[in-house]
Length: 140
Image 1 (cartoon, rainbow, N blue to C red):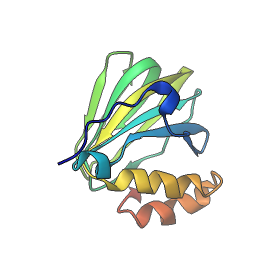
Image 2 (cartoon, one colour):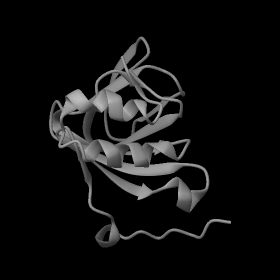
Image 3 (cartoon, rainbow, N blue to C red):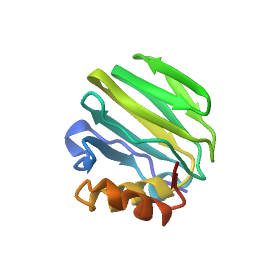
Image 4 (tube, helix red, strand yellow):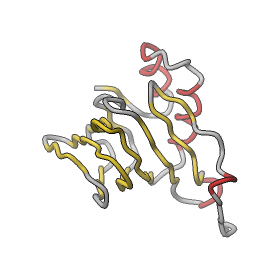
């Protein structure tokens, strides 16, 4: 049985840098036994290109705006917006003109290890496809 998690802002791990934006791992699957939680922040026009992975992912916009594409749908998400992406669905997002912040959650424990590996690539996007592929993610 997992232990309760109380993570104060000052106790958060360092954010992982990913091609101009940052992802902070708030809860790994090893702590929740089922899902992962992240804080994602970025300046304008940063975010991942079209990709898909074998886990569900949801985003809740806290501040700023985030332009999101899921399948054939595209929407500008404002604070209070929830976006859910089913597993294996092509999606992407880009932080809006004033940047943004969102909480995200994934349904499996692979995302945090993928983000850690991607952050070690020195934001060299040419390496992202191979690194992400090792974790089941595919850039499209």
